[in-house]
Length: 72
Image 1 (cartoon, rainbow, N blue to C red):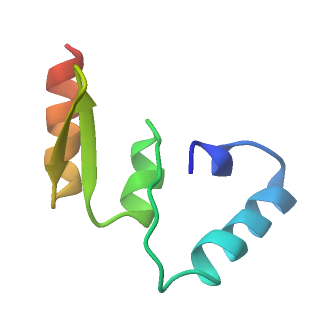
Image 2 (cartoon, rainbow, N blue to C red):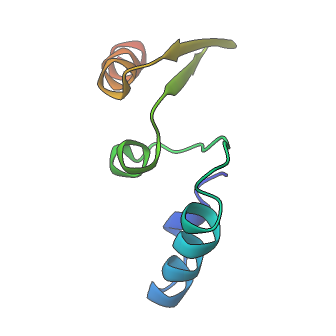
């Protein structure tokens, strides 16, 4: 999912919430976002792609710390 839940009006957001997170709460999927709030709300692990290499984290805060450090 690539930022799809950040576009549209309130009705679209509600529909995305229901379709993606309520109906499919027993499934895994990959989200791509720079929005820390969305990642923290919906994810329990994170990956940070830097120079073509994926760095995986079990802790969202650690992933964001690494992301901010790598972007500097």
